[in-house]
Image (cartoon, rainbow, N blue to C red; front, side, top):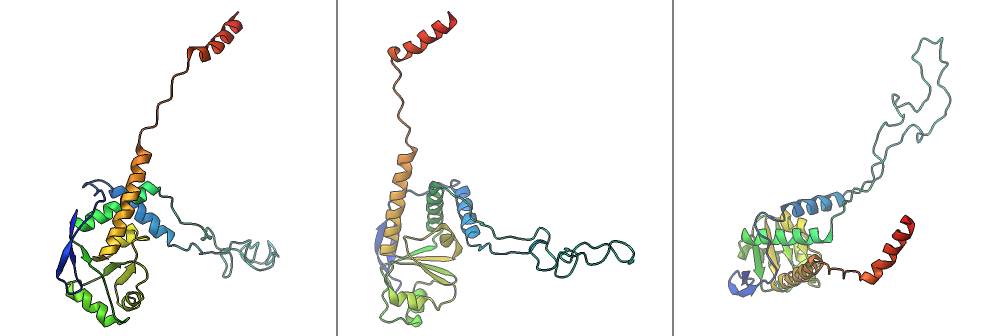
Length: 242
């Protein structure tokens, strides 16, 4: 897949060939769904907690006698029907995380990148160089690229000026190619890569793809047992029958 590389002024500065294997149309949709659902579920803290009748602080004494008062029967101050009582079937701390296989995550990431590239939502920059951590310089680069709306900027770690300049811009997130995930690729309207970042992502997808191909190779067939190995079992059956 061939991409056009631009400079910080928005002019063409060369081309770039990606070697990762794109996902065919109609494939990988379920993998993307499973991966995004699992990612969003993992963001939940799961710390909501309510008290049952046994957890509520209070006496175990019966509020009043069973008969003779004219009032409704009551057996506990912690009754769910009373103010300050326990909660029936309320939430308890739990883990919302879901299991997704490594191969599913790899397929989802390749599918998401393929779709964004085909839709023309990806812009590749030669590099993002800022002399100072000023938001004005970063916004100027985005405007020269005709990028508007929510934007994901993928660049290598270590660019402190870029990190400071971009964190105050609404709707912009800075990510690195080593930890980039499917949810981030799909969330934003525009995706901006630096040349080194997309090359690192391409290498990451190629390594994952080769591992997937190795695991999918057919297992070696077992050699048939020799007649001499089967003979003792056959002799034992004959003796039992005799």
